[in-house]
Image (cartoon, rainbow over all chains, first blue to last red; front, side, top):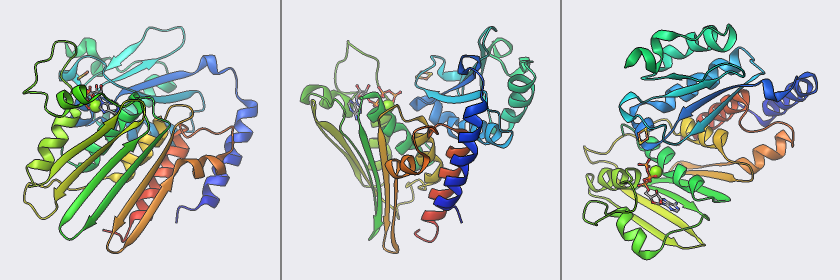
Length: 122
Length: 179
Ligand SMILES: Nc1ncnc2c1ncn2[C@@H]1O[C@H](COP(=O)(O)OP(=O)(O)OP(=O)(O)O)[C@@H](O)[C@H]1O
Ligand code: FES
Ligand SMILES: [Mg+2]
């Protein structure tokens, strides 16, 4: 059973990590498009998959955020990945199945998964 | 949209965009009806604007792109013999109510409300709170981000992936047995 006790345990664990965390300016950001067209195209399970994967791997330097329209309906679901000091990478036509690879190869090892990017789709 | 819970996710984004401090989601089921309410205290809409928003294809528009969210919800509700009502006052807030005939063949399933609620909570802007109430003949479940934040304290935000995962499980388990 998911109890508030469990939530308290998460808080305690995180508070310890906050103390030892480096500068948040080094954070990698994942931004998932959650406009109507994105949601209709399947953005919800994609966002869930990013959160699941980042939580599972306990990646402390990754933030996952949501935005509205990214501007290319036909390529939804879309996620943008911002690694400080590197160029923005836009992933398109995402599915939850594609997410673990992006997390492992791009967020952890800094190698974008080129075949899922907007460049490869166009 | 394949699930009603996806509409909820979409419509609640309007409340966030409207700068609301609170958004209250309610799903009530009983006597063959399913009613979804999204109520906020955001900036609201003028009567003229409201008319154009809920009926976008009969109103001439020059000033903005056609929104899809409310018309899609309206269509989904009307296809089941239900309907959409939007009440709004400038500077006060907006309440969107969609009623569905649950036994109609065209009524989409409610779907994964736990994902919808936890993702909305995960993405809430600073200073905004969300409640979710699910009511069926078998009982009621309530979720309130203010209570979650009280447990988490000031240092751990709702946007933390581990917190989001916990909230999803919490809502899913809380709703178990209500359907
Ligand atoms: N809760 C609300 N408070 C204030 N204004 C609202 C609210 N809901 C909708 N609106 C107004 O109505 C417009 C249309 O909403 P709708 O959901 O149909 O489309 P949209 O949000 O503009 O675009 P999208 O198709 O991406 O959802 C919004 O752009 C906004 O101006
Ligand atoms: S409305 Fe589809 S990407 Fe913006
Ligand atoms: Mg909308």
